[in-house]
Amino acid sequence: MQPTILIVDDEKHTRDGLRRLLEEDYDVYIAADIASAMDVLERDQIDVLLTDLRLAGDDGMTLIERALKLPRPPICLMMTAYGSVDTAVDAMKRGAYDFVTKPLNLDKVEMLIARALGSRRMEQENRTLRQQVDERYGLENIIGESAALREVLDTIRQVAPSSANVLIEGESGTGKELAAHAIHNLSRRSKAKFVTVHCAALSPTLLESELFGHERGAFTGAHERRIGRFEQANGGTIFLDEIGEIDQSTQVKLLRVISEERAFERVGGNQTLKADVRLVAATNKDLAKLVSEGKFRDDLYFRLNVVHVTMPPLRDRKEDIPLLVRSFLRHFCKVNEKPLLELTLDAMNPLLSYHWPGNVRELRTAIEHGVVMASGPKITLRELPMTLRQAAGGGMLSGAVTRSKTGAEKSSPLDLHETERKLIMQALATTNGNITAAAKKLGISRRTLHRKINEMNAAKGAPPQSADDMQLGPAQLGST
Image (cartoon, rainbow, N blue to C red; front, side):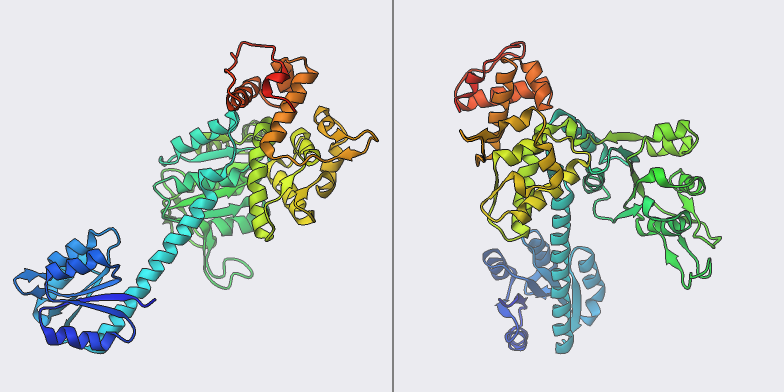
């Protein structure tokens, strides 16, 4: 589809001349006054509005102002006599893209329109890219409904609009970088850069150069000036991952750049530079313990730890596993161009009973492995990684796999909601309906188990149970 252009001029020969010039490459509309121009703008989607400044009995600026208020405003270009250039410049301050003077240079008109459309395409691409980044790193991608995770999300929402530095602690694979991205995307700095530095991957010398940059000749191999990450992140957010790995010398320089001075020098330079950045740091170590051991500066720790976020390990929020599994299944089936797969009960059991030392990252890898290895419409235990197949032999939940009269293992293909219901029923049966004991066996909190039971009862039309009811028969959840 060709771009659309509306030409507005009260001189017929100008309108007709521009139409003949442009109609080969564009869908051209014409109008002689503001009323007829607005009829076109409100009826059709116009990409470019090219209007004369002086219209019979009216002002082209009035048309531009009205056009810019439309839900999908066009790019506005103005034609004006040479003596009215100051007025055209004022029009640009009020939203017009550019102007061209009369008598018209037709080559310049074509060039101006092409440049305006190119600028619009770039804006649309940037908007799409920002939307994709937001979708990838927004809160909606930190998946789960557990109380532990909800507390983290509440903290992120509260701190994100502020300018406070944030320290995120948690084991590897718990989603610290996702949390950092969410803080940035929900902040007032979201349109500026989010710059990541993986501190553990660099030696002290290279890390200092990475953070602050270096001048040409600062060290062997420094053949040209390098702009550091703090300069790159100016106006935005810098994320220092595994900050517990940085040495004492770099800690001193880092302290200065995140203090009120916000000052630093490039390696090998003596010019003092400043950077306006919001700092988010993450570590899988206990920084407070490192401070007490003299391995991390206490003044830097206090600067970093204005707001503290602890990402819970997956073993402390096992009730989130079915949600995570469902999300990872959708993603990896799409990536691998497979129809949406299901997990059989024998595959789901170890996911719920396993201790997950690698946390969400390990679960994600396990589901990807299952999707890749599955040859049919369902993922069974034998298509999961070896660690999970080994774990399936122990723990109460592994007993949920049904067996035939001959003792052979039989896979029951169930959706995740049904799998969850079956496991809860089994836990209640083995504990004689004791919610506290059943929750402990399932690896979830008593409150979470009680909520899930009420949700299942509500789905079957049964009345909710009081949180004080310690005994509950599995039959209340429905028959198997």
